Length: 194
Image 1 (cartoon, one colour):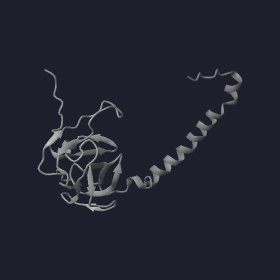
Image 2 (cartoon, helix red, strand yellow):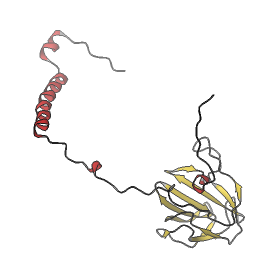
Image 3 (cartoon, one colour):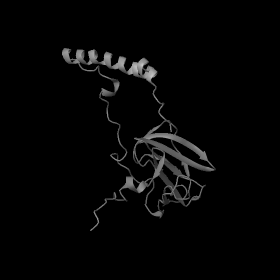
Image 4 (spheres, helix red, strand yellow):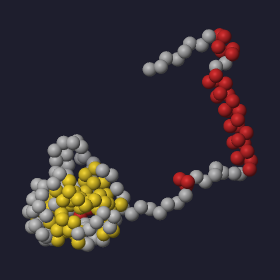
């Protein structure tokens, strides 16, 4: 913590550089404010004031299941901390070779193998990114996809290994339950205690 410096009589007479700057600034600010009020001017428009088209939100988009028929084998379990154990998605029953479709519109952001598991990731805009594994991709990075469009087939690898697909969703880098976007989780509402 910084302690204030004691003032001496000689420094009070001379004035400090800080005091001089403050006095000069207030002398200059007065005429500028008076000119704005007199001329009826306003501050020049800034880039932040310009209207922008709203970014589409993933919640408003139509999300669907990446495989059919739908049977959830393992639910989403949020980890207590970013690096703790948890299940950062849902596992859906699917046999090897089953068609996998895009859960919502977006742009394919990654196709490839991570730690021996083939993955397809889609950027849906608004900070939402989905990842489905193990999937042998039929799409390429940069390709736009529509909801329900085939993106690949269930492959082998990872904890599902040909018996299911793992479907994860991140919002601004943090994992969220895909069920919130699929309509399977109602939003929490806090009620008053009685």
